[in-house]
Length: 63
Length: 357
Image 1 (cartoon, rainbow over the protein chains, first blue to last red):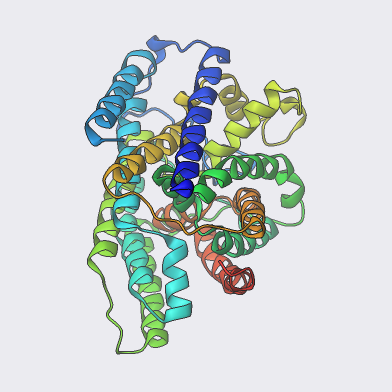
Image 2: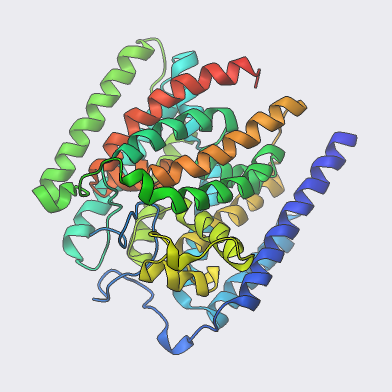
């Protein structure tokens, strides 16, 4: 019973910390320009992709 | 938490993203939820699959992983050839990759979860994995800060099999290599063991489809590590702990821009958040069971989580960004990552036994 309670508290702390981070980040980041919204599908859009990826080294994601 | 209110919360987040960020990011959030649901619902774990293969000669998890790699490559490689705006997951073969993949494979066995595994288990509410997540982010950030020094030890340019050979030959070579691995797995396991289990096959099919959707929508393959490094970098920057302009990785134009944008604009971050949400959805009906850990096991597990974050940055991805996305989009670095991480796993299993996980 005690272990279940501790786990429930840990879960609550985890989700609260995540939401807190996202709220802090939203508040402190540049406003989003909705007029510059990316296409829904990158494939076929003809627009160069500019997202970050784990495989990046010293340049943007590879082609 | 019950599923109905949880579904309402996830739907509200989707609508908020549509209204305040972009339709693309909102749809990628849904893709992430699907990934989290598939990973947690089928308990599709790269760490577990390798452990079962080595310790129990059970090939079902590894066969599921090979099926996932084959299906994802079959979907991704023709798309990369057809749409020039899509990116492959190309990391440079390097000393950094060798060291990073080895230590990632080692530490993931101790932490009992790879990149995706840590995410979905945290979403399921497993205490150790929830504790590991912030340390994974810290490690990933520090790895990105030190990356240039590691790369100076030796590297060659990334190699794309699709660009070198064309999609058809690259896909044929990929299936040939995956077939050879399946043969080796079968030899090791022996003929008495079943090849497949339903949950691993379902997981492979669902994840291959979702990874392909990620590629079509985001224009780049599925990744996990970059998002966490970005989160760590934003916090470190806000606290005045580092100057991005003085760092080789974070001074790159795209990275500098993402430091100033909301993480909700980052494609990797949004799927990571979705994975947590999808796993939470599964936990609402099938809560995860986790055995209690001693203080020593907690300490070792958290250190392993930090090492996992650091080494995955050095290795140009974890099991998702390097193994799945690398191999399925024809990057040579994925094929180097695989044996190095497996060697690390062999050591990690011994360490795991030493601390009685």
